[in-house]
Length: 426
Image (cartoon, rainbow, N blue to C red; front, top):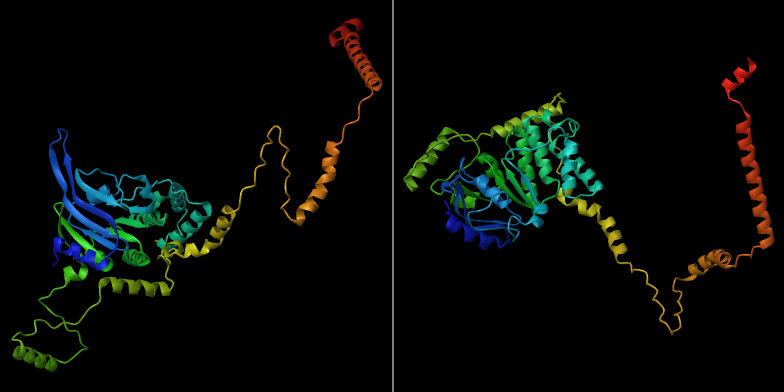
């Protein structure tokens, strides 16, 4: 077993990669109301997570895993020590858009459906509408929720909520992905899919911090891991360094008869003085058997009302989105490089006004020819009005207006009301 002190410089020397997360002497002490030490959750933790690495954080309950993650995300303040994420303190808002988080418990709005949930978080990251729409479609298909995307989250099972939580953590295509118990509540198929996704993200070049109690999940995914107990790091290294039993050896051969096994045993006793300890036949994992049975049922098109199996990894997580958007990026770059129109300088008193030079080419002559007649009409002087005609028109209009007003008033005065007309008739 490689101890923490010996494993850290060894891995750093072999990889030579830039660290994404660095902690030095990180300590977190929870205190009571009277500021007395209540619990030492993290105790002098030295840890490095390098770029393009899948790092596992293991330990029993109360070992300090969740507290460490919250400090890295800026949700808790350290008591002492140093911590940096992307070379900056965790409280720096500028690094938040580069991080994706799947917490141990998914806190989702129950009245939103899956599509609305992803669209909401996409807007928080200020993603364009077309980008959000494309990513939502890909993520829903990837996590197997495309068929139930219009159901409210409160109607989802715990496993389905973990699936939409994982999609939410990936909506911004993060560089650093933090997964706290990502397979909790998932069926074996979902667990297998999440593990394959984590491995593919690591191959693409993302940095992943995986914290889980499912040791087999961590063993299948991580490049390095650290084991915590009581807030302290007890061991750190690669899976091969920590798990290889160097005092034993396994020989795997095709099936042989008992007589051959007996002869091999005699040979071992003669050469080494050790006998064969155990002869067994290999057996597949339960996960492999489960997946094979479900795949067979799906090939037979058996009906199910649960979440569907996930599709392929979202295209934007495989860097295919950059190729799709290369055309629009080129157009934006060309538009941004256009020169701004020149501003005509203000003339200075006592100096002649500068003459504009036509650099627009032959088309400008055609445009100028079409616009010139309108300009000449606008610049032509308006005819002077005849005072006599204008005076006659004004007097005639005033007379007609006066006659109309007098006629209206007379009609109102001369017309009797209905009640008066009845009295006169009686």
